[in-house]
Length: 321
Image (cartoon, rainbow, N blue to C red; front, side):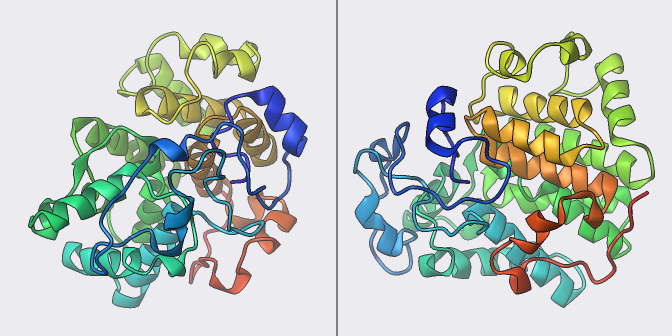
């Protein structure tokens, strides 16, 4: 989170060193383009910026300036709230999630994150124009929309849903805020991989097989040959470190394949590659956790989450295979 959207890797290292533990962000961010983003509505029912509005339009402002070390960003916090509702109600409903989403976004103090992505701003702008909430999603192309896919899929499978039912529910969930064929195909790729891992296949084997068969929209081309090259070259020259799905999702799957079984190395490497490392890391970490179970991660990473008591804990933790 503190080095989210650093595109100059040299400056990233100068500012934070090797990020292998939770850090608080600096108030300033040298690569920030938050000043170019805007969101005008201030009416209470459409005001999703709250007290963070004062930082918009300023140069050099960190996207997550008020978060503590180990605290979740907006998208992950929203995902956690959705899973908590699924647990409380024994399943997911579109109407229930829309109700949760509207209430959550209208209380910006509930997450304290400065940056609010385009999908959320577009949703509330459409709502302000008079559209029904079910029709407010905007056509999307960013990996931020993939944050809830694997965790929600896994929780639904824990609750007894079949792969087909869980995959359909996840697609419906994402479509509330993220519309478009690109997003639908990305969700399909991720739930396909998640389903095979859930059924007991090793994560690396699953991704390698898809790389050979070339049957995933987001993992095509000579991707298996890239494994011997430095990560900085693969994600920088072959795929951009930016947030767009056509680059960020294959880059994430590449890291999951290369570092399968080594979540610490995977997530530190991803972080130091810069760009949209925050959302790549959320998807990468979820795949690693699905494959290895809750003890797969360094214990200090689990203990360091803020607030630990609020972090999602499965009622029946799935053991490592």
